[in-house]
Image 1 (cartoon, one colour):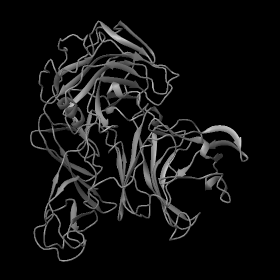
Image 2 (tube, rainbow, N blue to C red):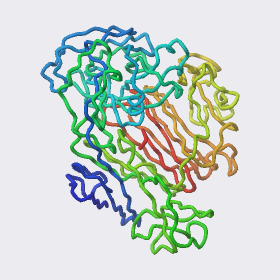
Image 3 (spheres, rainbow, N blue to C red):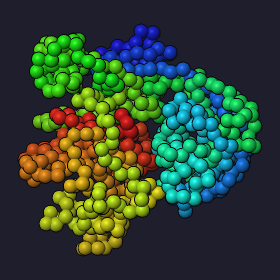
Image 4 (cartoon, rainbow, N blue to C red):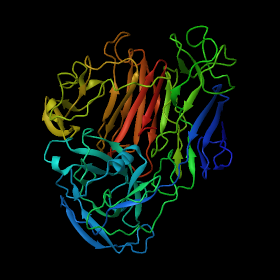
Length: 564
């Protein structure tokens, strides 16, 4: 059972009593509060979801349109008549028609620019400014598009040198060749943090694939929260561009939003109760912490997310405390708005449970807002402890990875009746990506080959937040996975020492991701808990990159898909 409360001045349009609501916030910011209770399980929990509505993004400058002159393009580039001139999404007479070169893994379109002002670049990186592009394409939903800003004078050097920043948009469900849509690009990363010069913009359609789709695009614009007319000396305009202002002007965009179809003017927001709010700043405890967690500081409120003290006196989240709270003091947190542009697909599993659990997920409708990461230990990582961005030309087997080779014998088939032979030859590193090939070839008595790598004895952690950005293949019989096993089997062989599956996909379910933990006695008395999440209908994980993650703390695991 779900009981929702929204900030005064906003309205619940539908969903009261259900796991998903649709809210018209107007211009109101505040907390969405949901009280969840289960008579059968005896659970009772309240979550707060902070939502902040920002002022509208206004036009600042046009970067590229059909009058721009390209420096080079891998595919077929031409200016053509707009096939849908009466579509209000883009009434321009002429547009760019671009057929991607299917022989190029990283097909690209390059435009030379006048040098960009540093303040503009800082605004794009911070999110105060955004790229918007009008698009008409026959590419599948989930296809990603990258805008890359770079210094063309460093372009001959190996990636990432000279690449200032990248921005990404995903073609949403419902997009087609029959209707113009406007894509909002979010900041992705800064490949070369030392680069400060930008005089070239690169557009990459479906990078990392051999697709040959046709894309029609127009009006690559920069919009900002506070509109400031660009000066002639700092205007990021290709020299041949007109100076007229576009006819469309967005009226607003909530920062805490995630849309299936990016829009400059959202009218409603839906919220899904997947996680507790995330602390931005830990405040001091008031009162005395009489002992170690869970007997310490807590919020002195009824039926709210509960916090206690760790042995060193810091606040720590705890999900299962019962009222009345035996605490002498309080912990308070300043919450922040969640990150934008993601759908609310998340799941939380307490470790371990006697029976599998699957929290309500709900399908998002209209614009969505969801809370950010749960403060399982009220701990914000000061820095990344381990990472591999695959910047070189080969796998780092000295400090980070090792190969697993063969068919798993004496546990032949790796315990899963797998039909492949694993070998290093199927693992490649180039262009900042790791690629694992599955091939139909006979080796070691197997009809297929693939690659399998692990970090055992080189990256071992008890607790932490683990993530990977992955684009998986599609096809019946395939079984890509991203998972964790213990370094030492202290409690016995699998699954007695545990397994955490962050991402598992089976080929006949191309739009479904499974997150699971394995534990219990030896097979066949093993146990597992977890659940699955589905993308929107018609969207597959193979269509583009997705971010898979799990947050592991004492007694609690939280899975994330694309940041939510």
